[in-house]
Image (cartoon, rainbow, N blue to C red):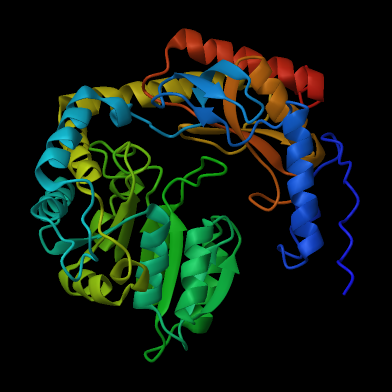
Length: 432
C-alpha cells in the first residue's frame, strides 16, 4: 500500500494568523494537526512565537522568560494573577515546606478513599471561619476548573436548566454540559433577560441553576449581584457564584463581590480558586453542609482525582491566615489603589472596556494582529496576556492586564507607556 503523502509545508504569515484557522475541525483531520505543528514551528524559528514561554523563577512583578526560540527576556509581569504575591511570600513557602516534610509529596489517593489529610480538614475549617458561615462546609478540588465542572455535574441533572451569563468561564459551560441539564444564556449582566428566563423555566418540579462570576476574567467588570440574587430568590432558583478573581480581593474583608453586595449568605454555591489571590493551585466550593457532602461524593472529577497535594495545602493555609490579618488588609488596599491608578493612566489613550477592577483589558480588536502584538509587547519589555476569538468574541481582541499589590508606581507607569506606544503603532490609540 502506498503511504499517504505528507502535506506540503504551510507558510502562515504571523500577521494573517487567527486561531480559528485551526478551530473548526478540532484536530479531527490528521492533516490539520500536521499543519498546526508546522505553523507553530515556523513562528518559533522566526522568534515571533511569544506564547508558552518558560518562566525561570517565581511570578513576581518582574520575570525572566525564555521563549521557545531560546531567547531570554526580562519583562514587567502583567500576565499572571498572583494578586497579593502570596505565591512567593516567605510565610507561605515555609508552611509549604513544613507540610512537605510531614506529609510527603502527594496525597496518594482520592479524597473519598484515603487521600484526605488532617491538613485538608484544617483548610476546610479555616475557610468556613474566614467567611463567618458556620452552617456551611467546604469541598476541596485539585483545580479551579474542576470545582465548576464537578459541582454543577453533581448538583444538576437531565430535565433541569442551567442559566449562564454569556461571559461565563468555559468551566461553567463544560460543567453544565456534563450534567445533562439544558443550557440557556442571557446577555452579559442583563438582569431583565435573566428574570425572563427564570419566569419561563422555574416551577416546583424543575431545578434551575443560575451561574455568574463576581469579577469577569475577560473584561474585569463586576456582576450586578444584588439584583441577580433578588431575581433568583424570587423565582426559587439556585445560584452559583464563581469568585475566582475576587475572593480575598473584593469586599472589606476579602470575602468577594458577595460581601460587597451584602448577599454572602444568599449564595448557594460559592466557588473559589486557589490559583489567583491565594497564589497556589486548586479550588473549593462553599455550600450548605448537606450539599457540600453530596458534592464530595458525586462530583466525578473529585471522586476520581487525587486530593490536593500537601505542600500546596500547607501554603494555602498560610496564605489564608495572611489574607485574614493586617497584612492582607494592607495588600488589598494597595491592590485597589494600584488598579485605580493604572486605569487612570490608560484613560483617554486606549479603550479599557467596562473594567472596574484589577483586571484591565486593552481593546485592540483585530484578531489578525494578535501574534505580532504579543511579540511586540515582549520585545518592549512587557509580559501581558493577549486574548482573541474564541476566548472573546470575534475581532474583540484585548490585552488583558493583571494588576497586583506588588507592582510599584514606576512599573505601572512604564507598562501604561508601553501599551500606549503599541496602540500608536498598531492603530488602536484613541483619538485626541
